[in-house]
Length: 119
Image (cartoon, rainbow, N blue to C red):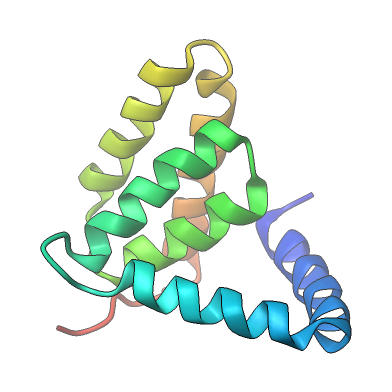
């Protein structure tokens, strides 16, 4: 399944579940805003951390989300590939499977010409 098909499928499923448990999704959105807000650690670096965790958790939807968010927050190609490298180092063999998936997700952002947010 490619990134765009996976995103559409997850969005549809998420909307359906959100309609059933809106309070949970509202709480998660509030937690997400607080956790990823700029602080001593920038939101870009928080997204890179989340990307490393997403790779180690082997979560395609999470990888796509955090690659896109890191890219939008100005993470460079080198920052993304070095984050993937750390995940590979921490994971061993499985990292060599999930790391390339994260890199493919990043390349898909570039193919869609998704521009970083302006600071």
